Length: 108
Image (tube, rainbow, N blue to C red):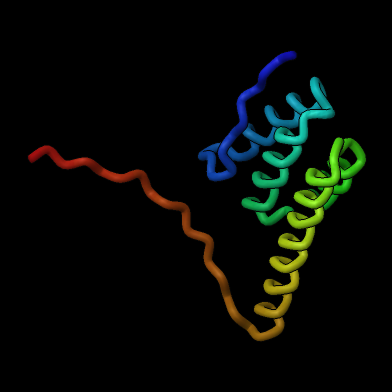
């Protein structure tokens, strides 16, 4: 069994992280962790439809009811995000996404 690294959704290069994660999924399509990591990356990029498609594919390869519950829970979360954003857009609320900056250390 090959072990592939997972990538942070807050990566400075999310497209590369997603590409590498897709390679991991292709090599081991039954590894749910790779699919969930892809969902995290896509959600961070506000690619909700793509994230939902990955989750639906994950349901097909899930091996237990607990995995299915986790996936269903994530589907629900993403739907809530989409609904909230639609509500904000309808109300004219503007959201700004800010990336955190690395902490600076000071010599004392």
